[in-house]
Length: 466
Image 1 (cartoon, rainbow, N blue to C red):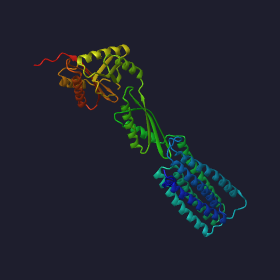
Image 2: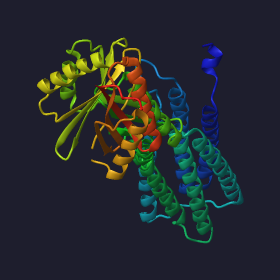
Image 3: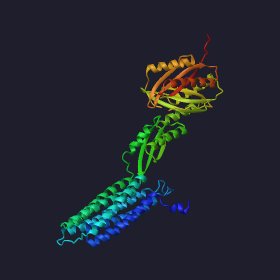
Image 4: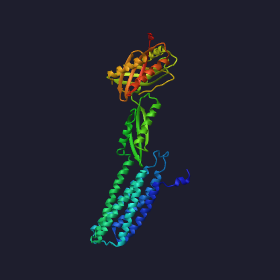
């Protein structure tokens, strides 16, 4: 990066720099008018503007720091510098207001009245101050909203309190002119109270950001975004924080223990996209963890892989329905095997699984040739007899045989069908898989709520023609 690029000022920095100039001008004009007229109210406002001058300088440098990109020492960037600056501004205001309150009370309780000049030029100065206060408040507020800057927002709040304080001073001087001598000190007291109130509000809001307090309403937005993702995902942890007007979201997404890495990555991408749509320019981090129950899946997978000819096992799903545990899985075998040979291998798989996991009540195996792969997802409750009968008709239409077994249940993500079909035992595994795929497609087309179909094939004697 060139030196000129590094030193170039941003719109936020230019706004802060303009505030520095305005604050310096107000300090001078208020202090001169206050000393010349003897008005404690104007001197209090000069002190207020002096703290604003220091705050504006601090804001300018804080924004320069906050605009630096993230680095190895500050992976989340430097935006909390703005909150630290705003915290410093609030502390300065409280200290100076305490001094002004002390002096105001001293003058009000003093037996000797303090003389205050109320010449026309004093009111002219106040008119100029009011115009400057309104202008810089509007400029800083627009910039704070446009760039989500906490420091510029703090400046706008201070400038608005300056305007209110100047109005109080004007009222005090008008009362002094009409004969109420202590009105100027009372106006100074009002200014100090206004400033303390603004400072406390400023400190409270920025302490919340520095303490990573969850911003109101943003957590709900993030949760709504996640719930809108289809197919539904499960988030076990969701945390949101803000820094320098930027929102950081991190969550833990649960996937099945044997889900492919790509599937988990795609789910995380969908969640991130949904959150970005609801919370623009947010920084989203999604961590993926396997669902509990991995130990049983590991036993099942290991047992299945121990069978002869089995090359790969995936999409292992275990669901509990009315106290019954059903297991479904996809097994890859060499594509050149006949269906009869493949079924013999699957018998071995089922026997190995039952020995390794006796708590499983039923095993449903979907056979695939080694060149292809399918995916699916899991959970529990039997579907209606009407849907069961409709799917049985689909199986018959595709295979010319009644299904040997058909179970249909509903999980939180949708309906799952577990089907066992009989096919000619002398056809190739590739042909059998093509027929099983056709059965699966027909079932899916029948009902959009069906999210997974596991088709298990059994060898049978060829159908007699005629």
